[in-house]
Length: 212
Length: 100
Image (tube, rainbow over all chains, first blue to last red; front, side):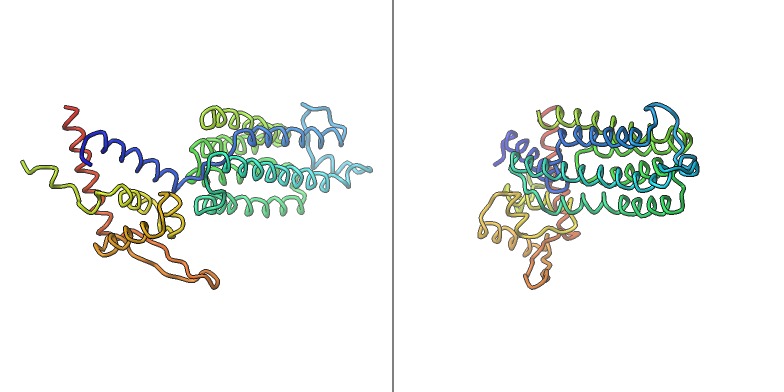
């Protein structure tokens, strides 16, 4: 085994093994795109249900304080929308990951999947709890920024165990969250951008880069 | 000049051993089944390469129970990491030499 070709070949193989054994590669681009549309639909549904024209500045705090029939339901509606978007997104991601793993002949659940999920879930679960406290204490206009920031940090953390694009998406979502915190009346549109548009862009780029 | 071929570590002449080392240097510890799946080799083959590396003190074995199932995982030792790094250096020298 000592021709140059052999050595180059074994180096390629080693690099491949290092990559495959540390990074989870079955995430799907199509799922990212669908998650983006789910988030956009969620925001549109929430605003429509409350009779707010899309594009108009929104203060959920003022709405809740305005009294009336709608006001009492605002917290519930936000919670239901968030829970629906989150659950649907997880299902879509999982279904596509199963398909992808099968197609690429990779194990669906292994050490890399476990590490990826742990890295992602620590900031996300923490963020979820924090958002519940915001919701409970009525700081409704901080929700969008907080959920964006925690989700972004989760993705940055998870980026080490997936394709590097995940980390870059995380960075973009995190910055969007920071920006949203300065514009509470527009925060819901930052949220639509961060969870909707950015996911769609990321999904398309992943799809063409890694899955042909 | 010392022949760089002599820097090649005989222990790493097999592709499978190189593969095992590659996986172990980037992971804290890896269990037997995962190694076997990643490298696509049989149990017996895997075991013999692992025990060779273990004898050289390049990898260490960690046995533990997950629930009731015994689980054997492997980790690279400091010595193994060192040996693997010098092997890669030798490879690199060889290739950059041919290119020059």
